[in-house]
Image (cartoon, rainbow, N blue to C red; front, side, top):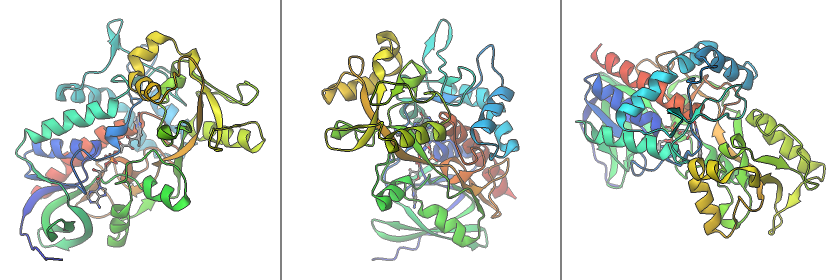
Length: 404
Ligand SMILES: Cc1cc2nc3c(=O)[nH]c(=O)nc-3n(C[C@H](O)[C@H](O)[C@H](O)COP(=O)(O)OP(=O)(O)OC[C@H]3O[C@@H](n4cnc5c(N)ncnc54)[C@H](O)[C@@H]3O)c2cc1C
C-alpha cells in the first residue's frame, strides 16, 4: 500500500457521517471552526438514513421534558445517566426547531405535529417525517454541511488515533493508501457495531454494513472509558418473511397506530407498546413455549397484526413500509405479517459528559458510539434525538476546545 503523509490540519475533525457526525460538523462550522468530516465509505452510508419511525420531543399539551425523562429512566430500568437524560429531553424541542431550520419538514395534522406514542412512552411524543425520518434528517444536515466551507473526506476509514502537539493525529486507510490528518479536537461519531455482531452470531440485523464498531475499539485502545458496552438491543419487530424483508426493521409506529402482536392461537401475549427489551423478551418466550409460528422457510416468528391500522394512518405514517411489503407480494393492511426480534442497537458506548466530552481530553463522542443517555435499554425515537442534541453539543464544544 502506498503511504500518503498528509499534513492536513483541521480545528475539528469529525469521524462518521451519520446524523450525529453531520450535526456535529454543522455545529462546529457554525461556531467558526475549520471542519473536516471523514467517513468510511460515502457520506450517505450510515444507519441514520435507514431510521424510519421518528424522533421524540415533548410537544404534547399533556407532556413535558420531565415526563419524557421519567419515561427514559423507567425504560432504561434506571441505568441511564439522569443528568445526560435531562439534557437530552430538555433540549429536544429546540433540537426539533434546529432541524426544521435545516429544512426537515415533520408530518403535521390538526395544526400541530402528528405525534405518535412509541414503546415505553407514557405520552404521544414521536414526531415523524412519514416513515423516512432518518433519511429526511440526514439529507437536510448533509445539504447544510455541503453548503458550508467544511471539507469532505469520503472513503477514509479511521485506523488509529494518537496525541499530537496540536491536539490529535488520526490515521486513515483510503483508496490511495494511508493518510494522517491532525486536528485540534476530534469528534467520534462512527456509530455502533450491530452489523458485525450479528454476522458473528449468525443472526439477522437491521444495521448498515458499516456498523462494525472498530472506532470504539480504537478509542478504548487510546485510553477512553466505556459503559454498558455489552448491552445490545434487539428490535422487537424484525421482518421475518418474505425473504426480501428479513432483517428489515418494521417501524415501531405500526404498533403506535394499532398493530398488535399475536401468537399462533391469535392471542395478544404482551403489551405491544411496552419497552423494547420487554417486548422482544416476550416474543422470545412465546416462541420458546411453542406458541410461535414458522415462516415458510422455517424461521421462528409471531404475527404482527397490521390489519388493525387504519388505511389513513398507514398512508400518512407508513407509506414506505406499505410499498416495500406490497412490492414483495404482501399487503399488511389485508393480512398479518411475520415478525421476530433482530439485532438493532448498541445501547452503551464511550463515557461522555454533558458536552459530549469523552474521558480523553480533546476527544468528543456523540450518537450510537456514546453511552449513558439510554442506559442499557434505549427507547425508540431517542437515538435520532441523541444524535441531534449531543451532535450539536459535541461540535460546539470541539470548536471551543480547538481554540484553547
Ligand atoms: C433500520 C433502522 C431504523 C431505525 N429507526 C430509528 C428511529 O425511528 N428513531 C431513532 O431515534 N433511531 C432509529 N434507529 C437508530 C438510529 O438511526 C441510529 O442509532 C443512529 O442514527 C446512529 O447514528 P450515528 O450518527 O451514531 O451513526 P450512523 O448513522 O451509523 O453513522 C456512523 C458513521 O460512521 C462511519 N464509520 C464507521 N466506522 C468508521 C471508520 N472506521 N472510519 C470512518 N468512518 C466510520 C459510517 O460509515 C457512518 O457514516 C434506527 C436504526 C436502524 C438501523
